[in-house]
Image 1: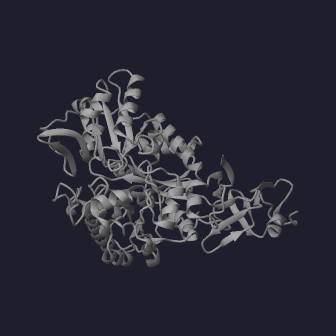
Image 2: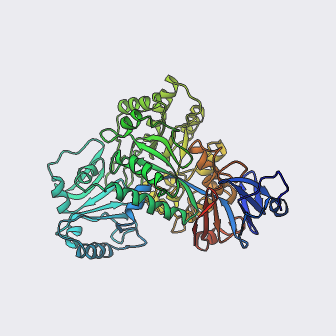
Length: 543
């Protein structure tokens, strides 16, 4: 029983292994008070904080960690995609499967209604190439079909969709985009900014549908022990309406996870002017919903051969070095403007040329308006060089990768780039050793938010096929958990708020069925589950 004058815990977790952080290690019990960690330590000491109203949570030997932080995903898109055709290789491995799923969906919809699908990867599809518009026409001739590649940077539209969008062989290709033609005929494949031609005629979701997507996507994250995330391009689907939807979701208790919103800043689509006018600059908000950074897209994806590289991709098109989306001049002006307004930036750059372009823009902005702790981020940062790392260190620029890309796409990288360039990509250990504090994430719906493949790859550097991508970049399980918790909080400038289970930080806790500190990577990948999730000391998910 708590001694008089001592704070009485609201809740005590005990009878399990509780990993509090990389430096803190494990404890036997943890006390929670008013949504925050009160104390952690030996069970005998912590149970002294028990009073008549204290709730005891028996972990029954389970393993608890700080709530995971998916430091780069698209929460609204993740929620919306739950209602679309799942075209991932696991769900639809062949073209025939894909066509059948589209045909089945068409049978449930009135003619002329849109069919949206996402997740195919041509390198894993049985045909080994992108589907052709005619193949989508066969499945649904009377419906517009829009099939997005896993990466989100490439899509296939059928003839009906292209007709609605007014896209044909004579359509001008938007700057920073690609409309594929073969033998003088369009194939239906659109990349980067050219996707906007079709997206513009797809009906925009309503505010209620966006709130529902935030709720559905967030609840899915909680089921994996993920209590915090970054939404990586708010405004991409429905503009400023998404900002309103987030705030209403929070007000109405429909925001399941702590969300760090990153504002889309791309030309013609930017929500930054409206946000700035409303006073929504980096750091505004609270622990539940925070304005994070501004996002610009500089290139595409490596697997889709649209990431901007200094050396061409392997394959038929010997001159293909990917897509440069913004000119140096435009990028530098936009980065300077956002930086001068007080925004952190978190821009998409995967290829070494895009990374180079972004570092230069950040350096110029930081020179003009010095701020040693602005923490500008390079999202993905897949193919960076040692020389670039030194410049990033000097300027205080941070890589924000997704290690699960190695698991899902590593073999595709080898096929389009060759061993020498592909295997050392996303060099987690190198970044860690240099002191970058790299976070991790899923980029969902690009990859599934399930954290176990992500952790498995950090430990093994293995792809889904078992290919080892540079074993020198492996880290320990404690390091992997630090990446998923503490470093995620650091990337959001919230390391004093969350990321560890220490006194004063939020009591966001993930409870897993297996002690990951003692499990093999294979056991973590395929035989571990999240069994309970707490956010702010409240149980928000149980399996």
